[in-house]
Structures are given as C-alpha cells and as structure tokens.
Image (cartoon, rainbow, N blue to C red; front, side, top):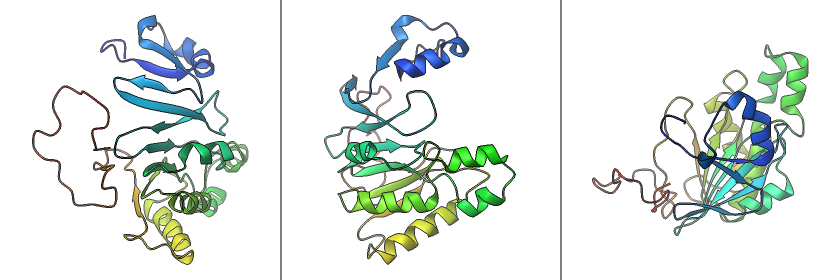
Length: 221
C-alpha cells in the first residue's frame, strides 16, 4: 500500500484499532469514512453501512452505478434491519454464507470460537443466508454472489444446494427469478454486469476495459 500509494478507506474505529499494526502510512492515503455517510472514489458513490459483527466498527457497502447498485455484506452475525435497509433494491449482492451448522459443530474449532461464529455478532450460516437471499430477491435483487465461505466449516456445493432448495421451496426459480453464484476463494470471479446480471455467458469486448481506470463501474461489476 505504501509502495504503490494505494488509498485506504476505513472507519475511525477500525483505524484506531489497527493503526499500531498497520505501521506508518502517509496521512494523504488515509480516508476516514462513517456508516451512513456516502463518499466518492473518483466518480463512484459508495455508501457504507454498519454491520453486526464483533470487529471494531465494521461496515458493508452499497456501490452506486448507473445500471443498478451493488451491495457487499460479509461478516454478518445476523441480517439486521440496518443491513436490510442498506441493501434493499441492489441488483447484485455479495452476501455472506460462512458456515454449515453441522460442519461447524463437528469441526475442530474450539468451543468458544464455535459460539462466536454462530452468535449474533459472528457470521451468517447457509440457512441464514438463504433467508436473507429470499428477502433480497423479493425486493429486486437479481444476482446473489455467496461470499466469505469458511474453508473448514462449509463447502461451495453445500452452500449452493442449501440456498437453492430454500428458494425453490418458496417458489423462486433459479435462472428466472434470480442467479446464484459462489465467489472463488483464490481467484477473481468472472465479471458480473449490472445491466444484465442474469446473463452468464457475456464476454468482455476487447478494448472495453482500458488500462487506465476511469471509474469503478461502467456497467461491468
């Protein structure tokens, strides 16, 4: 970050909590943000919102685009009213589906950590993510990208199956009412397009992504 002069956007509480381990960073790279107060990165508006998690001053983000908004909501102990209001109407949502309850219970984590993960300020289970996904799809979300899956306490296929089954039981048909993806752990996902979030086979046209970034979202997300 220091070498490449990458700006850092974070809340005051988070900054105070990590500044000793962060090391010296030029003040010009530090941008303090506040939940509920929009900020700009170039010409992109981003609205942070408070998330129920046991980290200091954690936030999610709603990113405005001309083709529809994108929500990022990981590290959620529960799908709170604040989070619901912040994400309502987003066309694409990166939603936490951190753990399968049975895998967590029978796994190797110590008891105190299991309680923390499953607590109201920990992480969303697959079942809780399914409830949140149904709520979001019912209010305009087209694409759910499951994110922050635990390497030890979840499996991508299990998360997908749990959420698909719940949505189908509620009358929501994949490919018609919504699109569901899992964010890869060790590589970038394929691009999602805000103007066509249901389309999976779109190709990025050569030359449509210039080397110098002018904006975060020009239609591709």
